[in-house]
Length: 353
Image (cartoon, helix red, strand yellow):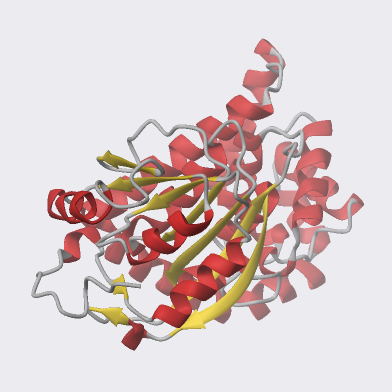
């Protein structure tokens, strides 16, 4: 296979996250892991100079490439428009996050790392559903996708993605396999969307996860005594009492959930990410320092607490206790635990938005 990068003097654009994979063996392994059928339409995001694209074209019925960089569009056009694969090759110039996507069976890509989270959720929102995605991510992000309860990287992202799909880590890829080399190590994961998706209200689901993972090392009893959390939930409680519960539409709720997540990522990309990460680390440190204090408070002073709590807080505490969740910590809860908590809260008229 012709490698158009190794002999090129092209300056790659860091703002587009351009780190071209040049290791032929790894490229071949990625294609093999995708298990492409001769009838498959494959989507590739950020194809760069087309090293992976050529291997995909050898196996698929059609390869649809989405590329934002005009220079790469020219390179790809030169390489494939008049090649033996010209009838299979389709190129969309534009931003993947805003592009209208045609139908595809598989997605195989070396992902621009700065759009990893919104990219995953946009794929999961795509209808009709695709069969499988084999994607290269920054290693820490990949580890967060597959993290299980108890792992320090287990987070809201982990729970959301694993609710909508099955995720498996396939292999690690060292930075020296790219040109230019990124500053971080990489990993390849496989994502298989669940079909059908679980029949839950994903707006409420994510609302619960937001609250829980904001202080993931604290006990639920401590998380749900927070004044702002109680205020929000009590407001929702009274609104539901007056207006009733809207009919659940899982597919539409997934779209709303993903739109919300993509908006969050857009805010981060405009300069707030580092500040948020710093704040999260500070909050994490505070959690670690206060865990033993919270445990002692919850275990040794229940009667004193009840005399000062308002009825709504007592209602939540009773839900937690009756479901054996009073002392559980989100970092050690799996999706079944979160679903149990959500259902228990909903049954008592407590809802999350």
